[in-house]
Length: 276
Image 1 (tube, helix red, strand yellow):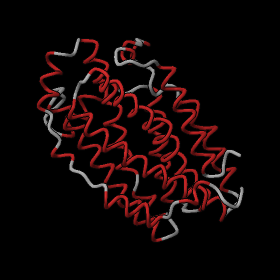
Image 2 (cartoon, one colour):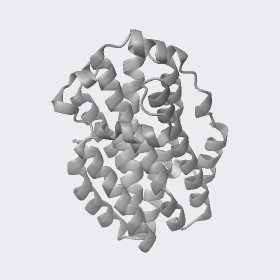
Image 3 (cartoon, helix red, strand yellow):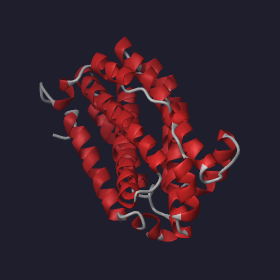
């Protein structure tokens, strides 16, 4: 691994400070126009595609919020623990945003638990495989807090899930809705989510770089994790029945999503010094 890499350009203290500066309230997003447009501006296939997409994000945010505690326990430095604690707050806030939209706009359940149950059938095989692995990773990290295991966990959470799946999806949601001037409340919320995720990914890249410097066993552990999970990631965004209208109605293709996800992952691993 090279001596100076992109990950060295930010500190954990700076990442924490950015969290304090970027706080926002999911409970104050106004969905009044979103409700009106959902009923009168969306076609049936628009609603089905949107429900499918936003359900993936809702369940994803709920899962990552649930699974972050063992990461905090395993982090070797206090500054890392502090940042991860802020990230757990962020993930819960993201879940609240999507829960509110799905309940108040799409009519998916009366509370968070009901919304999760209502939208569970929307989850793809690939999504379930990736997030089942995240569940198991949390259990493994509770038993093994070694740096190679933590490097695998950070790679799965921050690079695979956040950088290669969530971030491209957020970009296409914002772009697709913005092009048609739809769902201003959700677009506002997604903008906040995307900024949070950018900060999280920056942390993950820096932590992977530090862990790999400190323990040479981290890089082969990361490679092993990627070989295990990458076959599932392309299947996360395969729509029901391979009906591409679920995404093309919003102005992009499945190939666009897959390409941006792969490019994002490669860029983050390179920034961490793990893709040279």
